[in-house]
Amino acid sequence: MKSKIQFILSMIIFGTIGLVVRSINLSSSETALLSSSIGCVFLVFVFFVMKKSIPWKLVKASASIILLSAIALGGNWIFLYKSYDYTTVTNATLAYYFAPVFVMILSPVILKEQLSIKKVICIGVAIIGMLLIVGNGISASGKDDLLGIIFGLVAAAFYAALMLLNKFIQHIAKLEITIIQLGITAILLLPYVLFTEGLGILEVPRSSILFIILLGIINTGVGFWLFFSGMQNLKGQSIAMLSYVDPFVAILISGVILQEQMTVVLMIGGALLLGSTFVSEYQSKKFSRLQMRKTAELINKQ
Image 1 (cartoon, rainbow, N blue to C red):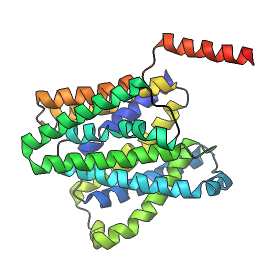
Image 2 (cartoon, helix red, strand yellow; image 1 turned 30 degrees about the vertical axis):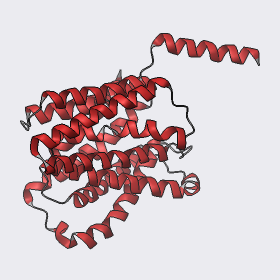
Image 3 (cartoon, rainbow, N blue to C red; image 1 turned 180 degrees about the vertical axis):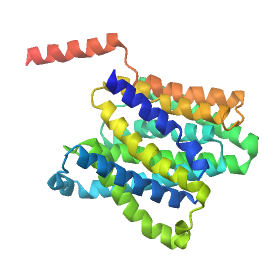
């Protein structure tokens, strides 16, 4: 129960990111730099309090993949935060949740995983849902909404790349990987921000300081800490199901707190997108028992 509560809390925290980012008067790259830097420092503090150590030999062995994953993490945040600037939190969240679809499409090529008929159908339904969301964005507010949704999809592509790259990082705990990725992301973003935005990041508006701290410590640091602490003792299917607390909270905030308009077409598109990704990850208990039985039969035959 403790693990489940920790994981749900992390999803609620992640679901509030859009609201917090909307209150920060900085560019998306500056916001990403600050959130990764503050989040990394917080997690390093937690790491040392827990008296853990990073296996540097294993890190060195996966250095190139970790570097690529840090680039993917930075791109993910930049485009997600930029998406919030152009469209509603609901549109940005739903576009971002196209990431599992990208993973399903790329898994047969990159991970050599077989694509089942069920997943093919789910991909088709998710694409229909995404087209409805895009069409609604165009009809609702025109170019800005469409651009925001495109930024959300680019963020989803970077996040899908991050998930796939992490599959190749072996024998390093998720918390350690996250600390290293956040640190590298911050280092890579610093020259990019200085080159594109100049030293404007040093002149942070007072009204944004509290929200920057919240984004760095709570949404990034505490969020990832609870996420990895919770998922340690949860089954894959429980993680997949509870992950939908995140978009639910984000959409709830969009409608109730931010008073953003939600049309019937948008709700149908969102239901198709989220529903299809949920179904693709869901396996019935009967199916799981059947798989276990088949595995046991194969072992006995050998």
